[in-house]
Image 1 (cartoon, rainbow, N blue to C red):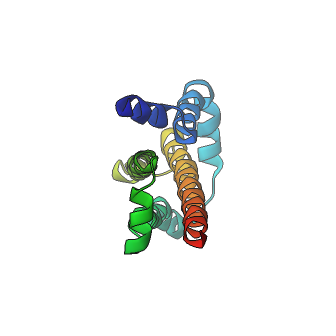
Image 2: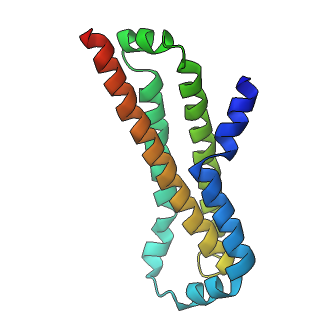
Image 3: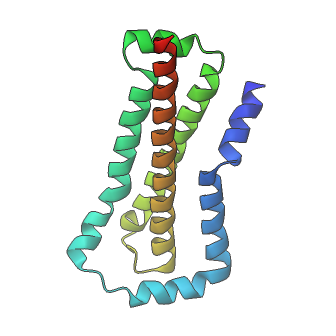
Length: 156
């Protein structure tokens, strides 16, 4: 049952939809994306440092997921006593996997030295940024919800 839940979380998610949209965009709008990439006039210094954005977001995601699952001792006891704690852990780990995937996607244009001046480079970079933002929003929302639940349990 848990393996099926992992697959569900992996493939029925906003992040999977973002990847699918990236693939569909590449398939049907490659020429338009290349025209857009050619028309971009971004300063070289900004391009050089733009690779750090998905990596910085990934660092924040890792820090937040750690804080989400490993808060103070009392909070950890409350969370581990929760019957659906395993679901929270699965969502957290899947978020980390997606975050790593999006970092890898964003680094490819710079490793191949094409940057975002090609259709593939621009699309990989934009897809990775959208994906990282989606993961970050999910982690932030989960963190807020867990804090609300813990506050309710402590209030009782």
